[in-house]
Image (cartoon, rainbow, N blue to C red):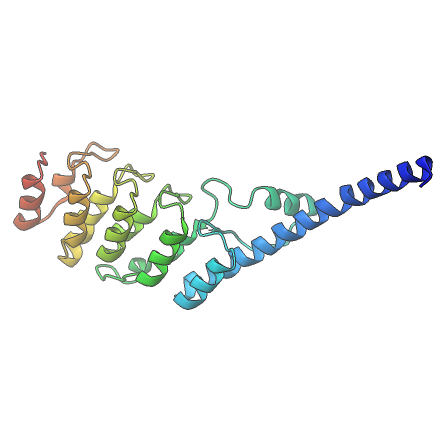
Length: 226
């Protein structure tokens, strides 16, 4: 082959690659976003089988629920590069622990355990926080979902993480126990070495939040003080 023609052919091939590779990458990222949004929808709907299927197809187990709004080209490109901004949107794990307690105070609304375990198995970030700095473990403690509390502590979730109020999962579990009488989450968190003497932002201790001699006895036995 003519050296000049060969050089032109190589340069043409390089040019094609420089155009094609970014296009393939953007297409892949867009496909990933669609998968992740489908995962969030399935998690919210409690469709365990679909969640497992989407995770197997490559959906991100730590995907966040970000609003689908009309965006500029620049915003779309930014979302492709930063699909899961810190503390923006609700993590998939927390979407499975929707705060139904807001509408039904004092009632326990356990999450679908199959979804929780599927997300953990694939490697969801068990310590991801939402805009209020709550973690999945804190949400599970708020609703008194002891099965999810057990699953998350077994997955080494940070038992002493705090939300915007300075509340730990154990504080929320105690408040939930005051309403429901269910102490299981409290016992699980204590066994997972939660700080029983942690105080909230106002300096109130976990023991001071507890109502009832039985609950106070559980905390005192674990070393809690006022």
